[in-house]
Length: 111
Image 1 (cartoon, rainbow, N blue to C red):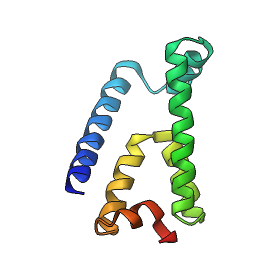
Image 2: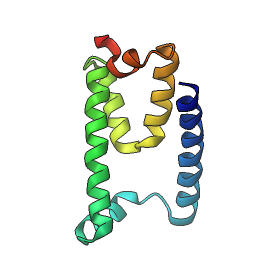
Image 3: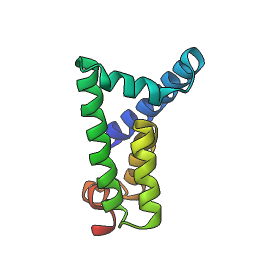
């Protein structure tokens, strides 16, 4: 579990650093870029669609894991909009709160 937590810390730092760098260089108009990429129907479109569906799946899991409360839906939306910027710290917190029990990390309130 320590290796996973270490990865989550490094992944969080990396994604935030990359995001700040991109925002400084290109601004925050990511929805226009993402929609444009999807409409091009090329490999970037394929990657973006795959990623959007993955974000949706993980967001649904987070809502279920949290027990479908109002907080759970907020977490689901944050995950869908932010991706790893939300998911990495969320999973790190979940692993610490579960004291490293993988079953609890996966099942949340259903454990």
